[in-house]
Image (cartoon, rainbow, N blue to C red; front, side, top):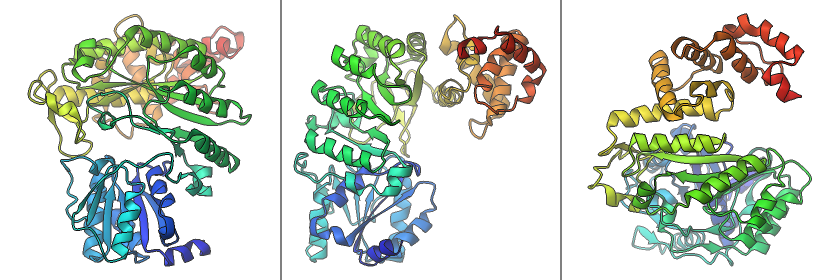
Length: 509
């Protein structure tokens, strides 16, 4: 700590942001730091989370009397950053504040950043250094907005050596092999990029190996389309497949591009090592066309089936509520199809209108109304009322707590059996909200008790059959106590388990 404190005493420039949680790290700050050239010795990174009190963050930043504070602004921290700027400027008005990041790259700014001195729009890997140098030489630019010039990804300094030992030990390591996206999905900021640009893969793999030797085992790739370039994707997969220790690698992939070479490698990954996030968003071809999204439904179904049945990868599918032209009936059909295709996690999101994205062109035709507060989610449109959106937000939350959590793998299926997943879960989520009047701070035992009550009292299913399914779910973890509401059935369950007649026992064998 003494060496670190000494470094901060020399600091003229602090790079900071408020991450969504402690386990996250800001790769953007490390890119800036890596490219600070002769100013690097006078620069330090201080990260916080949105759970930290803003005035405390300001205190810790100003404790070192920096000349310049650079802040990364994202959708999850925009409001807090606005408040942080206000506090810093009131307490230390001479401190220069520079903003960068996705939330200030496109206009309009819907959060007040007026008190910031400079804003870098776009990729600031080298632009931040140039701006700081001019400021410290007392020749700052006259304009507040600094337009980006795309850096050459093959020549900029890479950030990976600037993850600390604490990062490596306790947090996700964010990495990338390319920037940009070739697709034009109108709700996504990546659709604004001109093209996909790649880093020097040999250099990147060398840095990954250095991270591995330091003990890094959690790698989250931020590339928008990992499986776009097969040669590159295969080399990255080979890097991990050559390792003999447990690890976790997360990739965002497009759903309709899994050629044989990629399939062969993905099938080799052990259980728990690989997570693939697949942005489905909609399976309605008309809606997909509205948002300039390409869909090959046959390929999507084939590839999800392959991942589900022939690999150990953890699959995470995305669906969006509120897309222009998508009714609740259409969304429900999407959900039904996906659940029938796969038992994997399905993340249900609410459409957001990010500044600069082309989704704005639908505002008039579909009467799209959005919140002006982060995360700028849709409030209503011509097909979904405000009440519909509120209901679907609760639907998504309860879906996470029950279906996606994995705590009710078998018992949640009793909600719909061979009927519509969407219709039955819609009814359940509406009912559970009448019991809780909240979607937060619901304990696992309380949630299980509510599910048990709904299945037995509303769905009129046999208490014994529901209890057996829930006991199998709840008792998967050794040492877990039997919940009170299941205790009357625990004896029968244990007897069946000993006799080998319960589903749980059969699966365990």
